[in-house]
Image: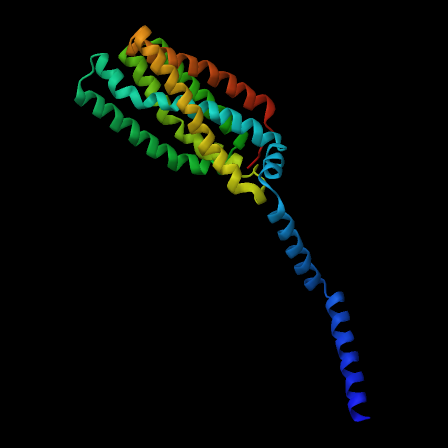
Length: 238
């Protein structure tokens, strides 16, 4: 008889505990979070890509960043290009050292600027500055104009931090790893295309003319990319 009473009491206690668990909002939240985690993990690569590209800001920014990254590879050949133009080794070293210093200072300023200025505007300005950099290098062999172009290339660091922060807040958090990898991997892939185009042009036009042609084409594409960012991206106030 005593055992029967004890078993009945235990059943009542278990029911009370189960009911308390059901009524506890914190526990319900934990269960919901765990269920959401399972759903996120269950998403395949195709579903993740579909979710990422459903964000227009991300899609536009990604496409324009591919253009920027692919033509940045032309800068790898500037040392050889300047030697062909008759620059001395000391002059090349001095100019690039100065531009690196300007770029470092620009990064410090850019971090603050990205916190106080509309980040969409920074991304547009960064693309335009790179466009002018490419266009000048593509059209002129005059030292003064080339120096101005290199200065613009270093100055873009002022706007790059805010531009990068813009896309970080437009990537779905649950897919941020995949979203960032698309920026780095895909941009490098398109860089191979521009390098291949340069390889084709060099035997036809010569190294200097071929590189200027690629810079000019890059400048035109970057102007289009800047317009696309200005028109299609949503604003991102600080």
